[in-house]
Image (tube, rainbow, N blue to C red; front, side, top):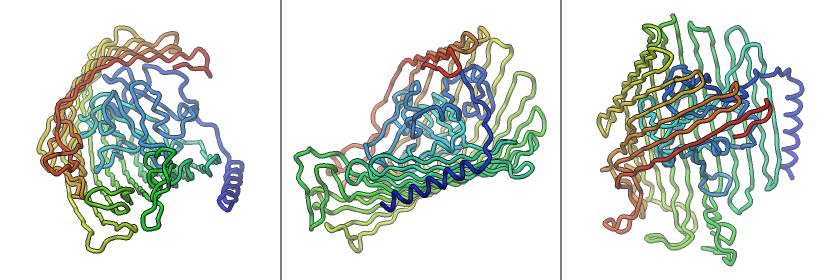
Length: 549
């Protein structure tokens, strides 16, 4: 009852704010897909859709607003070539994005160009990304290792957050309540406060008790973007966010005939949940500073510095005897990742139709894993605490050249040299060809090398009695090739795309039981993986407010 009363108070407060602050209409979004849509993530420069060699998906604020989706995964799950999966049906279940049949660890997920992929897991859970903070999403299919390094094998998802708009005051608040004591509160506000300085602030809270025992979730997030816009002379932005998620982990649902199970007087599971005591907490924070300057038409300079903090806490108990532990025993685990990065790139346009980009990037990864054993009452065992700390860094240089000698075709070539502190140097080339036989027809060819270094957990996971990391692992490597035809007809009311893709992967890392290690689960490099497929998509928009995909 207290929670419900609190919800009602906050709801009226949100309505009061929404009605009392002057709100101006936002700029009208796109109604159709066109070949002239601008894409940034594919080349790190502003290019039209018809001028990049990759198949892309672009979603703006209007698309997000019109969608009934409640999460980023739901939003992208129905898009061409994307598979959205959740690991469970509880409030805090991990959400994953798979592209073209590759695993979630082959998708590089970025916020404002900075990776939010966990260095320890090698993948990003997109369930925690708030939709009301997103202005635009760009999905670039195919190898992205040239520009984004390790992990960008199946594709890259770049989430571009909202920023203030001149002469527009954004102020929105919303609240919702549903079954299982579920509620959502959200608010956002942005404007140019004075002169060339503006800000955009978002905040969200989401709670649910879940429809199963121990499936509750409490989610809180806040973000702030500060912007100093002096036009081409200088564009300075500072972005920060913090996400806190606390939830239960009920595990698989046992058969309905399952009786309540107790250990030392504590109920560990019942017919509704495989675990009544397992818990998890995630704390993620990011800070990004960007400076862009275009002093003349043929020169553009971009600088970026970022810091990421990820802390994960896991409380797990065995609901049955699992050697070497008895029923009720378990462990607490704290995994902390700290990532510091800097990047600079220089774009040159020496003459009409030609573009050159040179860049350099440095990333430092600090990893800490702390574990403590629990007895069969859930109390920590003295003398069992272990702490492991490791550091990895990468230094990269990359270059990309684009040339359009005429309106009928364009060439692209680039290479990245990534120096990994453990695995040495890797050269990552990419090639592209764009053919424009007609004004509204484009044929795209892309071929690029990709690689993915083993994660911190793959390398250094401590011996917990049933699993252990492997420091002898090798990086995954391969090539990704695709050919795409895009056609726009009837004043862009009809858009069609067809793509053929082919990728391979050598030294795929897989966790499995190793009989040579007394049944321990450990990662190893296995055989080559290969896949090929077709993507066919159509969007018809006969009228402004009606669309069919």
